[in-house]
Image 1 (cartoon, rainbow, N blue to C red):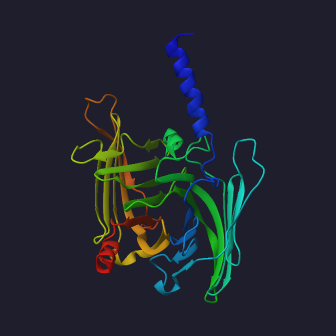
Image 2 (cartoon, rainbow, N blue to C red):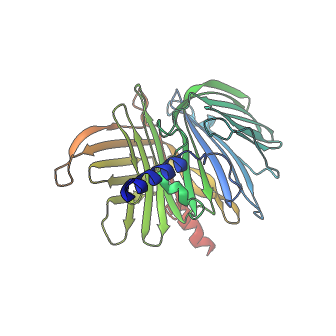
Image 3 (tube, rainbow, N blue to C red):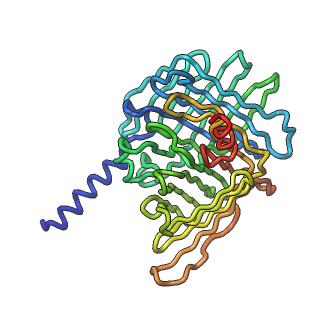
Length: 374
């Protein structure tokens, strides 16, 4: 066996081992871990659920977030958001499955439970103060990678997860969901499409942007991306675009910008106007994303920082209008050819329903509050 052949086979083994590790399961080493699900309801509304904890934090160590954003056609008075900070957290891991997945249960006594088993994630939340009852089941999982179902947007970069301040994993990109909730004496139940992900590490970065969108069709088109200030002068993003014809991933070194070098990534954002634009490319693929949300549509979210969950440290809208353009070329010196273009984040009736989040210093609201406190 030649040295080159040996090196290639060794790399393939490492590659498969990295992509076959279940990073969605709770880890013993990170400072914080958080699970986020966004369910786009069939009527265009959104149900968001977060289970998160910061280990040994002096305040607000544990978080359960439940919010409902009604569709544009419904009364805004039906919207609600509850961020609860339970004192206790219990994590139970179950027998590992033959495919390498680690089932687990997260229980916040007196508030709720998140349970993962196979392709299903189930949430239950029951509280009397405020009065809220929620059940959400996500099934028929559509993984990030059909070839390696335990892999996520970081790809082989996940091998560096212990060294990185923040990591991102997507459990499912567009799975089926059934839900029921009772709030303020009103009960609603139905179905929807769900995106489920996880963050873990030492703390959220100083500033970031996150976006996620579904579009109709079979199979359903989806987009999800996250990134921001990785280091001073360095911005990095992870991007996934899925359609009937394409399953594109972008990650560093391509989705990386080092000021003042132009690089392969260009990002522009204005949280006060509710706008975001991203242009990311490799030598043969290019994705251009633009998103716009009404400034009044953003709701505040608590985020895991080193000292615990900080309320109103990110702002997220679920009624953004997102447009995607995909370009290709065979060789780097050839001109780009537009191969797909259209909205990714509107209902069948044309109502905007994509998610867009500005976090930390990328949000003008956070910057203004921080400046006042200083």
